[in-house]
Image 1 (cartoon, rainbow, N blue to C red):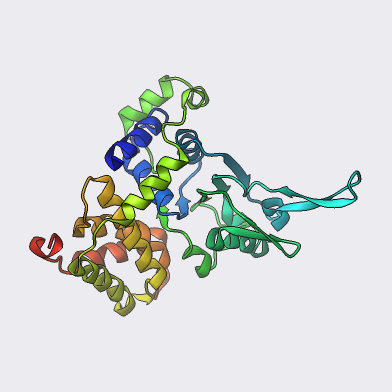
Image 2 (cartoon, rainbow, N blue to C red):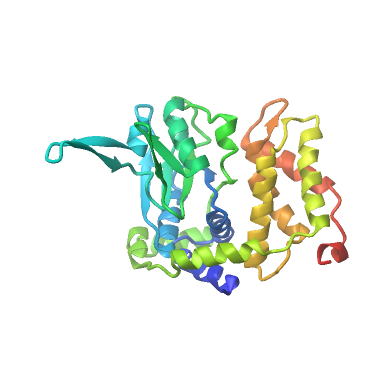
Length: 314
């Protein structure tokens, strides 16, 4: 399979609806093929829902949106067993988690009990209802959103759940010219209706298998580990990156390299992805915002020496 063509078909299709966010779409694609989930922190109205809807239609996957509220119950996510009077048996009715792409909108507004039900789906790709386990769809990806400007009536995500997200991203505002085009252009809902699947789930499985063959030399892996270890030894950071975080960056770097048409990972792949993969996994000694976490990781990446080019392709 031509992975560059695979990527371009998906990104070009999504760009018909999402303007000026190519880098964001590419990172969503990396999470998708790596089997990971996304935590999206941004203000309302920047296109978070539209992005995932466009991605779902482009990849031919089912899409469900869940609005998280304090009264949301775990069964509202996982589904429930309903008694069928005709058969005198209980029948399982799947909840909205049983889709390929799930938007968990304002995830931090749900109680910890409900968030724990979501954690099982994220971590184990399954849910448990009345003692029985049900597998999630394949592929399966959750994109959870948080509004960084509001904290009233919210429940902070526990560190264990934050660590389950492969990347934390932020849409941000479009450039002025791009935003003007969107304002005077065709309505977003109309554009979404025009999208059709450009790849199949079989294409994605083939892409995942091919990405697995991407080479990571000993020097590049050592470079990745030096960044990880630096987060654990920095006085400004109370809790550094976990082993799960190191594995996440390793997988994402392989995907980025493969989509760039390279059979091997280079240090730039590590540098490009370190902040979105690591920033939400660290705890700062003095506390701090999302930007503080990102600056701390970026500072460490800039300090760790990059291996020589000869050792990267050896």
